[in-house]
Image (cartoon, rainbow, N blue to C red; front, side):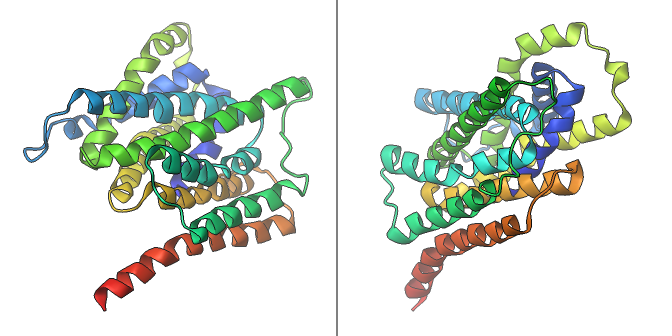
Length: 293
């Protein structure tokens, strides 16, 4: 989630250099090439049934395709710090969806962890420094559109975690990662080709190409594989708490690399968010200790 937060923030300069649909298409294309060897079915894996194929498509549609488009558009209309504030809602959304669809029991400690995570980032938003850093020509309606897009991206990311939990019981992390990326590439291809037709690729700097390569590998390959591997042994509701690292990383990346600013009180908000993570992990450790005894 820390890596996700960094590329969420760094998508802002990429969205300024590339049309959104072209950026999404290039991202999935680079990821597809990098993961060709992950597509092959392992010998010990059962064949995919119809429900698994549908879940893979839904995982890609929500967690890859729509999340990418909504997130890139939202960050382009606001800024990385604003994205971090709104993405802080993800742990609560994951807990709610896992309770509704997976019938996972969320403990009181788990709900407290969610509360700490959201309270930490809410404190950051109350300082007044998380307003959108848009051009003077951009109206308030565009800013609110950015907010709505980022909120939609938060719901997509939460659904991605819940569906991913179902998939990890049927397929390995590498296969899930490669297949949902291939679906993302297929979904992005029509509009990607259309925007690529008249685009001047020679106008892109070497720095932009390097940033695009990092963004593609991080977004399509590294983060998905890490997340799916973790979901194999961690309940979705508990894993959702760790999405708090997404807004923290997005905000810090915006400050360090994009020149955005934070007030002193906002750093204290990060301590609250990290307290939520500690609360989320404590029950697991306690359970493991009791089993050893």
